[in-house]
Length: 150
Image (cartoon, rainbow, N blue to C red):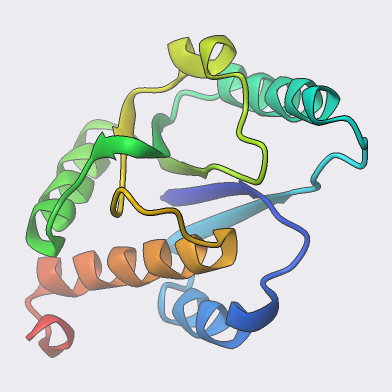
């Protein structure tokens, strides 16, 4: 199973395409929406959200992939190979999407197995979720050699 974790209130502008890919990936992707901190101070937000994420990651045996601006980039074929290899080795792969104020990376680094990047640019979180869902769907079609990826 593939899981996606993100601190997000809503998908706003991207809700329809996100729903479409969730429908296409039915039972293959589990999405864990975490409630963003309501604190006003940025350092308190980082501390609280880091703690929430750290608790989740420590308890799980997932292969943990952090979407990170300086992470490794893949083309779609290599991403499909990466996902397939990790699915053979691990029961679950979790993709963690950065949010507005990041987290304390030092605190979660021991719980991260891999850092992945779409591009060195920054994208809205909802768009990153959509892009990840689309690439996971594309990886599934590449694996099956269906027509979506041609």
